[in-house]
Amino acid sequence: MKKISFVVLMTLLVNPGIDAQESFLTPSDGLTTSIPFEGIYSALEISNNTLYALEADTVYFIDLISGSTLKKLGLPDQSYKGFPSFITISPNATDVWVGYTTGDNSDDRIYYINTTDNIWNHVATFPANFDLAFWKGQAIVTGLNSSSWSDPTGIWLLDDSGQDKHRLLIALDGYSAGLDIDNAGNVYYASSYFSDNALLKWNTDDITAVMESTNDTLKAESATVLTNLPAGSYDIDLDRTGNIVFSCNKYVEDHFESFIGMWDENDSYDTLATTDLFLTHLSTWGNISLKDPGNEVYAMAYGTEIAEVHFDIPQALISVRISEAITVYPNPAVDYIKIKGKNLSKGLVTITDLNGRTVLKQEHLNSDEAINVTSLVPGNYVLTYRTNKHIYKALILKK
Image 1 (cartoon, rainbow, N blue to C red):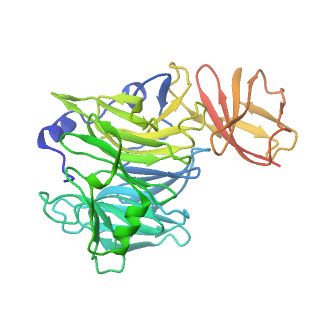
Image 2: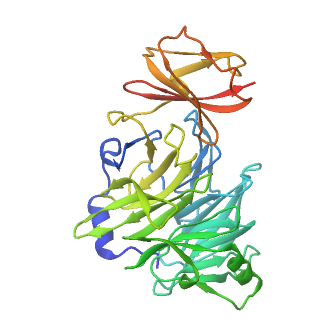
Image 3: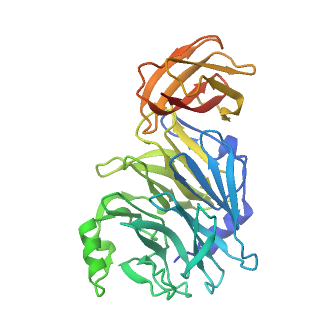
């Protein structure tokens, strides 16, 4: 089922929001958070260096380096009234897929938007859709595919032919939850049962077999249990190197004990951040296992702004100033770069590649100081400038 229990829902409505900068997520083991983007969104997804955020009937394209809104696309059918359920970017980053549900599951739609012509295409109707990912180019959806909340949830092969004959691939119990798929075609799902929750993996060979045989259906018992979980999950995401990050929401008496976790590649997980709110969507940027700037989890809770969870930032920092406050020049760079900005104080410069690996780190004293970049391999890098109060970021090109 997708529906939240009545008691939990009432708690969310009574306590709908907080000061996100101060109390959204409590960091664990050297983590902290900051809020780089304003606005209350319903779903988010990161692809390359772009954050795609879904707010009601509008998709925002936000540059993670500059913090600027690249464009926003509104649903042309203004007569349609649905609740956003997910946003997913196609593997080639040319299409944005979004899902909507209705209170009675009567007109629950899935659209894709071609980012070249910006046209919304209604490709399927799928009752109580929850999340979508791609298995070797084919769209896979979690949800009920039923108008009845009492029916079991599952993972389905989406029929985008217009006939809406979606095929059940994996039968599940409990609430619907997010899924993700790695490059080999292995399917990952963190369950949301009433008890005995787990991080599950179905091998690509088993998925291939059930794809080829229309009479077969996998179950939770068919999966490998990567780790048991203390509560039900809402969302899951694989970072660019395959690290698995997930959210868990545990309701205890009159509050939540929720957390963001990362599988430790054995039989347990590390806790990245905790909160007393109901966590919803999350997405990763970079390599979460590396403790360097540029490797973050972007997450949301019910009724809050987007929070950024990352490593090794001093606890006192609560704000991020994206590159509008600094200028890096020359850019593109050959031998050196300089940094200037209004009232820019002494700070630490870190340069990472687009896989999140640190390639240069040094203290920066003043605007006249040159930073030698001759050792860098030609390509794009993220420069992070940390002072005692703020973080600044900029994208640089080494020629």
